[in-house]
Amino acid sequence: TKVIVVNGPNLGRLGVREPDVYGHQDLETLRRDCTEWGRQLGLEVEVRQTDDEAEIIGWMHRAVDEKTPVVMNPAAFTHYSYGLSDAAHMVTDAGLPLMEVHISNPAARDAFRRYSVISPVATGTITGMGFYGYKLALEAVAHLLAE
Ligand code: DQA
Image 1 (cartoon, helix red, strand yellow):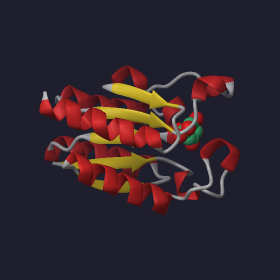
Image 2 (tube, protein in one colour):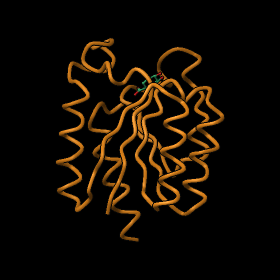
Image 3 (tube, protein in one colour):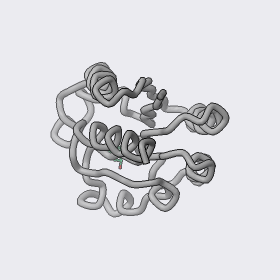
């Protein structure tokens, strides 16, 4: 089964951006990790990143049409994009898993990070576990697909 791992704005700067918060590893490393974790679970993982709200929304529409489960780190869109929230809702409404991941624990940071417009429409949310959170999310997808 194909699964898309979608990363939102500024996550192309992993490794350079606030390494104390997001770690020293870059997006390429995340891509390799997720591909390998997927392989172990029998999932064909495609890792994507965009800074563009229209593009990430389009990816949700395509996921619905192609029945593709989603792992998503919406990054800053988490906190304000009702457009992405509505698009993510379409994915779970279609009966597809959508796991929300955050590398850091947003609840322990700035006040504006405490609310997620994605969590209410996600299947589940994993926070604060670094890149390992993506592994947990892929395991959750594999579990949900096997159910
Ligand atoms: C993030 C947390 C968000 O608050 C922030 O805007 C990000 C990354 C995380 O992975 O911890 O860009 O989603």
